[in-house]
Length: 334
Image: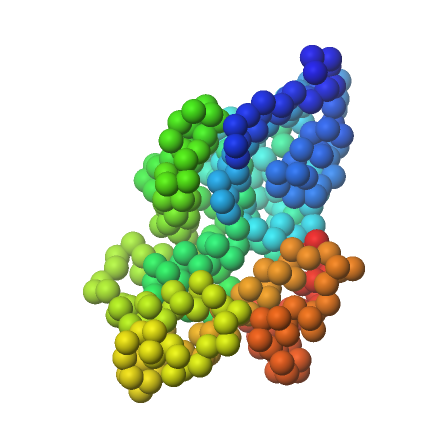
């Protein structure tokens, strides 16, 4: 594929190197690796378009070293995932939802939310950027596992992240190193025994580097907040949320009495064991609806599959947790 405009691919499992001078091919590649998008070259005569996309898929993360050569603008719908842009050179001017323009630079990265239509008003031709997609459900799950508590409120981040020093700079260097090792093709980063801990370390590191309401709890942990019986019950629910758990069964799995489990959950999780089961199932419904095409799934079927028999109560809890109706999530997904 040596002709100009033809895509050139090479890579290992989970890693991909892509080169093209064709805008449509570049758009399709970003669609496949990241999100559906529209891409337009701005002032094509000023710089030739020459996309260079090196990406690594690592579980819930996609880490990319991206550049286009020419100034481009792009538009997306809702991303459905957290996304970090950390330019190594040049700038990226972005908007999300109803917010104003924010600029990513080599000094300050941008961390975008899963919700809200997203616009890249200008990706400068001299901009080479570290571009990281982070699964929303997986990041939320890591936070809950680290804190030992269910996260009921939306996980909202401060969009700006200082990458000149401290945790922000450290995280960017770490992500680049992991991606480089995976792209090399013969390193340990592609081995499952190493890749899984790396995924967790990247999720943990982002939660420590970015600003959010739970950051202080993570940065300055006190005494362990989750006793072993509570951990055993939470792990069982997360591993098999579709199972028809009862409080009695969870107590048996935790090797404590029903009363002790209920008291421990209220103290350390902030809700009853069965309420926690519902929270986990709501997360799974949300993720399935977000990924499904509207013509391939029905809200009632997905809810029933995850144990929600009463549609009215399910819809009310769903809206309370995610700020929108299940049907709206389905329409915006796919």
